Structure formats: structure tokens, C-alpha cells
Length: 376
Image (tube, rainbow, N blue to C red; front, side):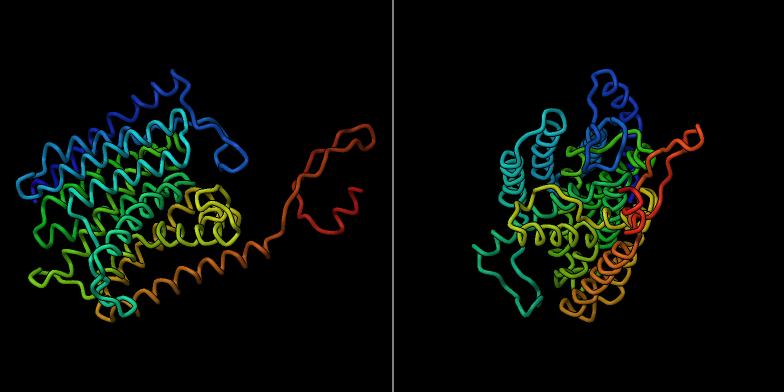
């Protein structure tokens, strides 16, 4: 337990001390994330917060973790180094989606081949148990890459990706501590501490963004943690077995994972690349309905926390019923947001006008057929 507390404290302290320095250096070198028509921020903001997250996570894990107990950790750190350089290069000079995908496949290869991370059974989900070796490998690669990108794609509102990453890493860490897997717990809490320090500077109004360096790293570590969670929780000799471990793991990552799968499906249905940008994410729906950045982050964090509680509370009902419950909750909220957005009046700014020699002020008014005719 002392190792876990030390890992959390060290990672928090290192990231907390590093991020203000990163902000100053980014300002000196003009390394900003510039606003455009798709982004929701309106001023140039540094996007190198992932450097601080990686520094705290890597140093704490290297210093505290017992590599004799968790021999796979060295490969997890090697994969995280690949993701770190991949994200850093993309944050500074922007790389093509193909190169980014190749880097993610390389990181997945390291954790699967060397780190012995693999999904070899669905544990009764959709009536499927053991998986053929080839299908198991393909499915594991797909899972790792989707989770890596899920945190990258959900990172569209101040504090959102960090809050969700902190929540999921903490939940995994608490479970691993409870069952005696201290090496995995150290890695989880090293990530949680680093994210917590970053969030101090990232909640609205954000002074820094995590960029691809941070979001891809959080995605990779959570991909490793969820697969390890499923493997450990379904082990017959574990002290706290989880009857529906795949569904519970899915519930822990529900908001970023389901939103990514939903958006990918929309883009593919529209015959576009799954990685093409748009404004279909769940945080865009909340923003379009008038919620602030802070409100969106808090509401989606609360939603994910509730689904985690439900997943652990009802894990005995089985994978299929629990997955159905999680899907139902998520898509009910998505449907409500779509309906509310359609009913919400569209606004426009009236042009200023001169009346009796005085210039009237522009106003924001609902866009109606009558108002359009008045402007013609």
C-alpha cells in the first residue's frame, strides 16, 4: 500500500512542478494550439501538457514499481515511450493519420507480443467464450488501438479527457490494490497522479492542453489496464472475482469508448474516414445545448462514475444484460441531446442599424422565418 501512495504522490508532484515550466517554454517558443472553426477554444493555448503527464507517470513508475513482480512493466513503458514521441511530434509539426496509425500499431505490438497482453476469451459475451488465436490477436490489436484513440477523440472540452482518464485509472488501481497486483496498481496510480496535477491547469479556463502526447498516452495505459483487469478478474483463484469482467471493464471506459465507436460508425456510414474531424462527439452535443465546458466535463464524469457503480453493483447479471444496460443508458442520453438540440432555437447576431442618427447595438435573437424576412 505504501508503494501505491508513494507512486500517486510522486507522479502528482513531478507533473505539478513540470507543467508551469512547460507553459512558459511553450509561450516563449510560440508552441500553441490555434483555434479554428471546429475547435471550441478561442485563444491560442499551449498543447504540450502531455509532457508533464508523461514525466510524472514514467518517473514514478520507474522508481516505485517492483519489476520483479511485474516483469511486463518494462514493455509497457517502452510502448508508452513510442506513444510519447508519436504524440509529441504530432503536437509540434502535425503528422499524417497513416504515420500516427503505424505508431499506434507498433505500441500495440510491444504490449501484446512482449507484454503478454491478449484477449483470448469473451467470457460468455454474446455467447462467445474462447477465441481462435488469430482472431484473438486481431481483436486485441483493435481493442488497444480503439481505446488509444478514444481518449484522443474525447479530448475536446477543457478537463474532460483528463477527468475521465483520472477516474478510470483510479478505479483500475483500486481494484488491483484490492487483489494484490501491486505492480499494476503502481502504474495505474502513477497515471492518476499525473493527470490530477495536469487538471489543475486544464479545467476551464484552461492554461494548457494535454495534446496528443497526453491523450494517446492515457489511452494506451487504460487499454493495458482494462485488458489486465479482464484477465485478472476472471481468474479462478482471485480474491475478488468479477462475474462479468468484460462488461465491467467496458463500463469503466464507457463514455470515451462508446462515443468513439458511435462516431466511427457515423463516419463510416457517411463513407468518410473514421479519423476525419467533425462535431458529432457527445461533448459537442452538450455544448450545442448551451452547457459550459466545466458543466460538460462534470456531467460526463458523473455519468461515467454512475455507470461504473452500476457495473460493479450488477456484475452478477452477466455480460449480455450488463452491456445492454450500459448501451441503453448511453444512447438514451445521446437521443435526449439530439432532441434537445433540434428544439433549441438557433441564434444569430442582428446587424447594427442607424436610427434617428444613432447607431443601435447588435443583438442576439432567435433565428425564425419572420426574422429572416425582416433582414431581406
